[in-house]
Image (tube, rainbow, N blue to C red; front, side, top):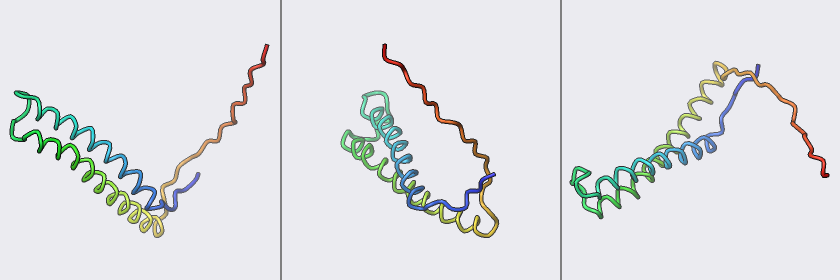
Length: 103
């Protein structure tokens, strides 16, 4: 059994920041386009507001993901230091070295 003792906060923050940015981009793009199409949205947004929404939401989600990732790693490291980390099993497989012979 292996044990995850520490998570580098910057690494988790970067990973979650990127993931949340992508989720925010997909959500805002879909919602923003539906708001721009006449008769499809709630018609509460103008085209300019929808474009601002499409740009601002991914940045906001990405920033929240970064902060959340940093905080989560810090909290995990604090708890794992006192009580131990997550235990997991690792299986190492032999590399597959298949070579094709040239004819």
